[in-house]
Structure formats: C-alpha cells, structure tokens
Image (cartoon, rainbow, N blue to C red):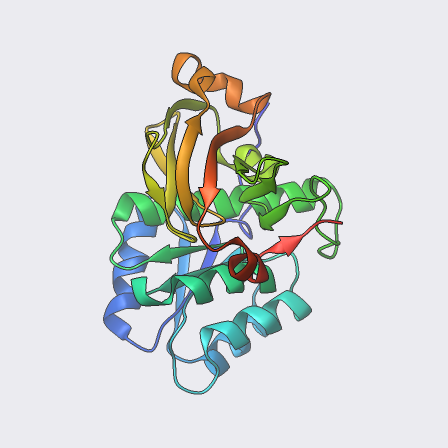
Length: 258
C-alpha cells in the first residue's frame, strides 16, 4: 500500500532571486498541501537548510552569488537525500542536463505550467521516499545498463551495432510517476533534441510527466507495443530508436555505465 508523504518529504524550499517567482511557485504547490518556504539567495537557502529538514529544493539556475549549479553541488554533498529541481531557460538546456549529472533530480524549462511544476515536484517527493524507505543515507553510485549513457534516473541511450541508438526510460523515473495510463511518443522521422521532450507519460490523477531525450537524433523506429498497452513500459522500457546527430559530443553531458 502506498504510504503518504511525511512532513519532511512534503516540505519544499524554493530558491530564486525574484520574489514574484518564489510566491508563484509557492501558490501552485500549496494547492497540493505542500509546505513551501522561500529563499532569495543561495546563502539564505543554506541557512534554512541548516535549520529545517526539507524533502525538495527548487532552484533557479541563474542567481547572483551562489548560483543554481553551485547550490546543486553543495546540497548533493551535504544533504544527499534531498531532491533538487532546477528551473532553467530554454537556451540553457545543455547546462540543465549537466546539472542532473551533478546530482539534480530533474529540471523544468521556462516557461512551465502549474501542472508541469506539480508533476515534477510530486515525483521528487516520491524519489526521496524511495531513499528513506530503502534506508539510504547517501546517494550511492548510479547503476544502469552496461554500455548505456544516462540522464541519471531519467532516460538512457544505448548504442547498437548498426550505428543507431535505442532510447528508453530509467526504472527510477517509472517508480516515481505513479501508475502510467498513457504514453505519448514521437513519430518516425521526427527529430529529437538532447534535453528536450522525447515523450510524455500520463499517470493516475491525469498528471503529465515529461521524459527528456538523452541525445539528439532522427527517429527511425517507435516501440509500437506502448501504443497498444501503456503498462508494457514497466517490462519493456525502450521508447524509440534513433539515428544520432552528434553522439560523440553529446554523451559528454551524460553518465556512462561501464
């Protein structure tokens, strides 16, 4: 039986140097009965983190002083159980992918909708619950399929012998979305871009979750099983096969599993 989040897991810290952004995020998340605090600087964020236990930190990437990347790095070192979500502009998607490599849980490109913010935040809470339930006190080395390149705990790219790359969704992403009732895939011939939307999944409660593409490429095959039965994503997690556009350069942003 699924357990309700604890008070800590439902505690969210929003970090942005624009007070209007903090207040907007707080209003959206309070509708989900989450407890939301605000910090206008990285220093203020760490003062609050030292005094109160949070489950999720949502931070803007571009801030004076301690920026979003520094904040992710420090939270990952000192509070490894906390899920950090980065808010980023579309022009900085590459940096956002690198932020996940540093330890961020996920990112939200601007502009985002209330539904998108809520979906990723609730997933982040589920991610922390997994750590606490499994008794993990620190983030261990990420493990995935050998030879695969990952947006960690999100999506993977596995090069194949014919030069194409198979792309799929990581197990931890599936564990944090809730029961999936629909998978919206691209079509053959579509062009995917690294760090942008590969697919959207809908879970119970009609919550939408975006799956980011780990690499850029032209779609040459789609997993049609998912169109017939969305639940097959749990046993057959690959989504598409692509002809990569810049594989050698883009894998530098990903986590490689030897």
